[in-house]
Structure formats: C-alpha cells, structure tokens
Image 1 (spheres, helix red, strand yellow):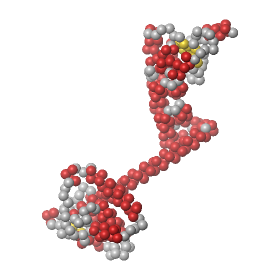
Image 2 (cartoon, helix red, strand yellow):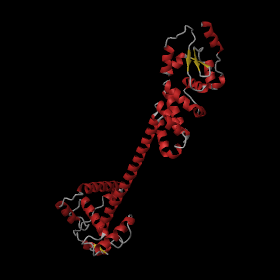
Image 3 (tube, one colour):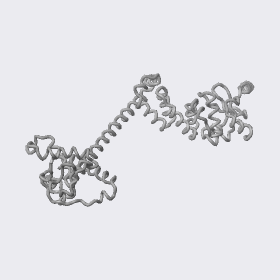
Image 4 (cartoon, helix red, strand yellow):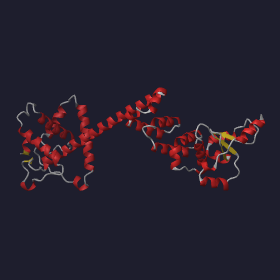
Amino acid sequence: MEETHNTATAATPTISGELMSSDFQFSYQNSLPKPDVQILTSNGLRIPAHTGILASVSPVLENIIDRPHKHHSSEKIIPILGVPCDAVSLFIQFLYSSRCSEEELEKYGIHLLALSHVYLVPQLKHTCSKAVGHRLTVENVVDVLQLARLCDSPDLYVKCMKMLSDNFKAVEKTEGWKFMQENDPFLELEILRFIDEAESRKKRTRRHREEQRLFMELSEAMECLEHICTEGCTTVGPCDLGPSNKRRGPCNKFSTCEGLQLLIKHFTMCKNRVNGKCSRCKRMGQLLRLHSSICDQTDSCRVPLCRQFKLKMQRERRGDETLWSLLVKKVASARVMSSLSLPKRKREEPRETIHDHGIRNFRK
C-alpha cells in the first residue's frame, strides 16, 4: 500500500514554469529555500510552495498545514480543486507577490474571487470584486450575482442588483436568468423585491424633487409679490410710489414676476372675485394668504390684505390647517435657502415702510 502511494506520487507531474510570471520565477528560484509543500490541482498538476508563506497569508491554509496527516510520509500535499490549474497557480503567485495583472483578472477573476473567499485572503478578494464588477455584462450578471452571494461580497452584490434593475428586460432573456428561475426561486424573489424597492426609491426621489421645485417656485413668487408691492416692476406697482423711485425695467426674476403681474392685473379688475367663481382670483387669494402666513413684517408690510389674512386665520380654524402649516413651513425653508444664496449686501438692504394695505395700491 505504501509503495502504491509513493509510485502515484512520483508519477504526478509538477507544474511548469510557464504558468508563473518571470518575476515570480526569479524570486522563487533565487530568494527562497526549498519548497516544503505541494499544491495539488484538479488535473493532477502540483505547484511547489512554502508552508511559511502560505500560513502567513491565509489562516485557512495555516490550519490545513498544521492539521495532522493520515500518512507518515514527510511530503505535504494540499489539494485545491474545482478551479482551473492556471487559476490555482495565479492564486499561489498572489500569496507570494500580492500582485495580479489586469489580463489575469480578466481571465480568472471569478475563480480567484472564489479562492480568495474560501481561503480568507481579503486583499485578493477586494481586488477581484472590483475587477469582476468592472466586467459585468447582461449575459453574466446573474452568475456573478450568485457568486457574490456565496462569497459574501456586498459591493459586488449591489452592483449586480443595480445592473439587473436597470436592464431587467434584457436579463430576463438570458440563459443565466432562466437557469436561476428553475433552480433558485428564492434568489429570483430577492431580485424582484430589490427591483420593486429601487423603483419605489426612484418615485420617492422624483416626487421629492418635484416638491422642492414647487416650494422654490412658491418662494420666488413670494419674493416677487413683495418686490412688486414695494418697488414696482415694469407696469405694476404701488400707486403712491414717487416717479423717481419707480422701477420700469424688468427684474432678474421677470419670468415669475411677469406671470404674477398679469395675475394681479386680473385680480384688480375681475367682477367674479367676490362670489368666488374665478379660479385665477382664487389662486391670487391663495398666494396672498401664503404670504400672510410667512410674513413677519405685519405693521410695515405693503402687500395688500396681509393684515386681514392674519386676523382671519387667527379667528378661523380650518380643516386643512395641518397641510397648510406644512406648506408654509416648506416654503419658508425654501425662502431661507434662497436668501442664503444671495450676496450679503443684498440680504441686508433695508425694507421700505409705507403703511397702506389696500388692493388699490396696485397700479395698472
């Protein structure tokens, strides 16, 4: 029995130098003592190595080396099976040199990722995860996702999930997806849940952006309303403002200001304003109410109906008070953010104080 084992060992070929880089061969041949362990690959080839180096880099290999052997032979053999011989050679080479070329990662990145996970080599695992992630395609993303789960590689897992989510229609047609559907329904459910959550996040983000855009527009409308009622802009402004102080040129927010001017002109002339049948007048009333809710210059404010709206809101408790308060808070916040973006000199300009709050203050 002993003779048979020795004969088989002697007949097993050792790995050729072509599988190792020239730098590694030079270091291997000139700087290290005689190898004291053999790495056995799936096709029967052996890679000579040094237990000290293997044990210092991989705790798993250290445990294997320290484990008692069944045979009394002094020759130590560590089988690394299930992956190509070249991948095992590159793995051992990395344990010695901590280097791996892009070409090698492109060809054997998936195998090296599996080996680095099994033998607990975090540096190689991180390198392989990034390399495999950079080479994701619609065709291989399902297979790589399964590997990322098995190898506990969260960054690669998330990257695969995002690619699946963004290219789901194309991935559904691949053989990898069909095989996964038949053999791993739990992973399919996991993917579908991720896609559903990703779509929900996108909808929430879009809704939030739309809300912020609306709040900024309302904030700008409030600024334009005060600007029109205080300084005047083009053809609309306080009727009692002196000719030398009238501002005829358009302001820097004229796109908003012009629409508000047209609304003000309509509001002052509309015959249906009192009975509440005009939608444009209702909109103007809402803007005036919103201004009154935000305004902290009650005694000096020149916006028409500001004081009246404040008194009315104090007397009445409306059913939409909570939603209205939230809107006021959001617009006020947007206004603060907008003011912070202005130059300091502009923010500190004194406000004019003319005590007249009637609708008649608008000139047409």
